[in-house]
Amino acid sequence: MASTLEHDRHHAAAPGATRGAPHGVTHDVTNQAPPLTPYDASDDAALLEGLRREGAGWAEADVRRLGTLAGSAQVQEWADLANRHEPELRTHDRYGNRVDEVEFHPAWHHLMRAAVAEGLAGSPWADERPGAHVARTAGGLVWGHTDAGHGCPTSMTYAAVPALRAQPELAAVYEPLLTSRVYEPGLRVPTEKPGLLAGMGMTEKQGGSDVRTNTTAATPTGEPGVYTLRGHKWFTSAPMCDVFLVLAQAPGGLSCFLVPRVLPDGTRNTFRIQRLKDKLGNRSNASSEPEFDGTVAWLVGPEGRGVRTIIEMVNCTRLDCVMMSAALMRKTLVEAGHHARHRSAFGARLLDQPLMRNVLADLALESEAATTLTLRLAGAADRAVRGEADGAGEAAFRRIATAVGKYWVTKRGPAFTAEALECLGGNGYVEDSGMPRHYREAPLLSIWEGSGNVNALDVLRALGREPGTADALFAEFDLSRGADARLDAAVAGLRKDLGQASPVGARRLVERMALTLQASLLVRHAPPAVADAFCATRLAADWGHSFGTLPDGTDFGTILERALPASV
View 1: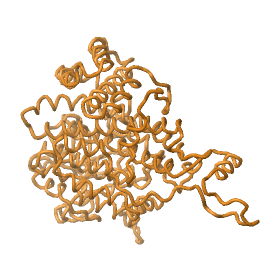
View 2: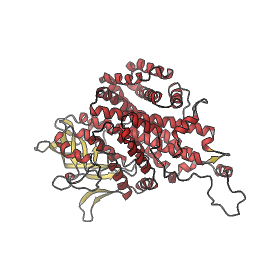
View 3: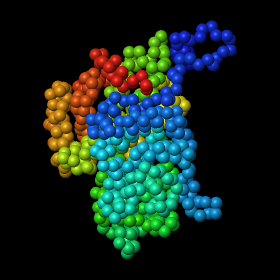
View 4: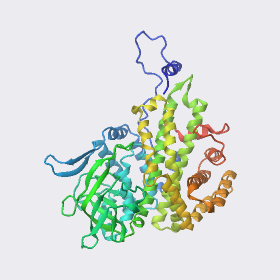
């Protein structure tokens, strides 16, 4: 943290600072950035270009409107309040009856209501327009400038729909409610509500990501498709959702089940919340440990095929992890750029200081690469689920590229947010700035839906068992062949080393795949200054070990003008 002497030097160097002020006048505020809000969270060239390129240009007006809303003073205050007033667990009512309810600050409900109404939950599955899933992802990239916690139930609701389709009779009942744009909190019979949210209960304390070791037992009741569950889940977020997808051991093996909080007859299903997790970040969102004991559940998909049933769900939530990491990068870059534009030190604005320009430009490259990859993954998902002409190739590309992106983009988040925070100096280290909240949030996206090792090994599994995934990845690289010698060399190196991949080297290989994929996209779609700087540093190693180490010849001006328009 800056010393008092250092602070005084900055203050004294501020243009227009009052000199010789009367003795005792100590609280004149100078050389501080004004509030960022209101601002337009959608004023991002990489995002808007990607939205159009991936087939959802028809949604641009809505994305821009949502960006203005996300950057408004009111919505930014909602985000702050939802995190300062954390959810509280109420296990019993005043009479001693078990209720297992979680109470949220009104700001949480304001955020949830807006997110669901704007189509950030399950609605794309009911939208026949090509690009609907891209539009949702773009909306998430701008709405992610608010609060990350409420993105958890909207993401789970989005991801639950394709998994539920493995049981058509259940999907017929619940899908119209999960794809609704109406948010109505409160535990009631699901079919009597105008819209539903879905949660997930997959992991258990003995296994974590190794869900095949789950011990929660599912016992058939004798009624077709109906079971009772007994067990304890370890990380079940958003416990006030209406329905949950849960993994449990049925007689035929690990299976997927639908668990409603309220049964069709209006009685509470057994869903005993033992405690809420005391987490590093994501404080606005409640993560719980529910206990099942005679809990009624409906089978989703065949017995013993639980993992296969939730595969599509995993693809969706992994995409959202990439999206939220990219949104967090963009948000903290905007905060850092705003501070640097208005703060002066040693006689010049921070934004005009050469080394600060290097730092911000390096962050801008990382942010654009993350955003561009996120939208490419969303485009692949949209085309794959719609079964379009190139759907098979897009499905194969999505299968491997989503795991690659999940590994790399979420890994970059913590280092990125730390550097952006440092741009604000001591101002960024205090809670009032909001930057500590973003910094605490960043590690979650790498952990959720499979940590780094899980995703890296999943890439190897895809390469070994699904050879079409490698073909799809190299077909993507072929689209930029000859455009940059450094990129061509990186692709050739990957092609040579792919057959020698081993678990020990999985992270290194996946990192190279991610950087090559990002470079390929930027070479094709970004301005030459951006693509050249990215290839020179990320592929050709003309770079240091931290942000702000771009080479001297970098076109900082073009990169910064693109990344930090006047409105942000």
